[in-house]
Image (cartoon, rainbow, N blue to C red; front, side):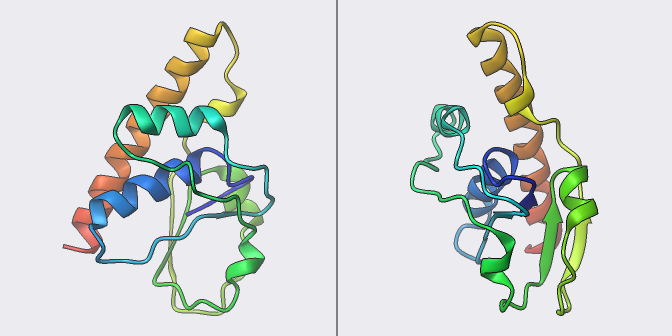
Length: 133
């Protein structure tokens, strides 16, 4: 999972992919930058029974020696800045809205996080069904 800052969308996707893969795959997430794991992302995942509180924000350079099967970019910025992977990795892309840019009251911002969480959850479940089943 690759995103700009590895703080929200890629972290949520990593959590769901791990959940749906049920140990059948190694899942990593990274960013072209690192911004730390967003506490709101941790909170909304906890609401859905998935604990990502121990996740770390990692830079893609940390994984340059791994021969990935798939690389999934979850934002347009990461897709455009995605480094070349000298591997057989099949690349997928889905641009999810960035909940970290949500504005409004805390209730409204958290609802944006939940909306994006549900989009990523559905995508992740379908991805696992199509590519690991």
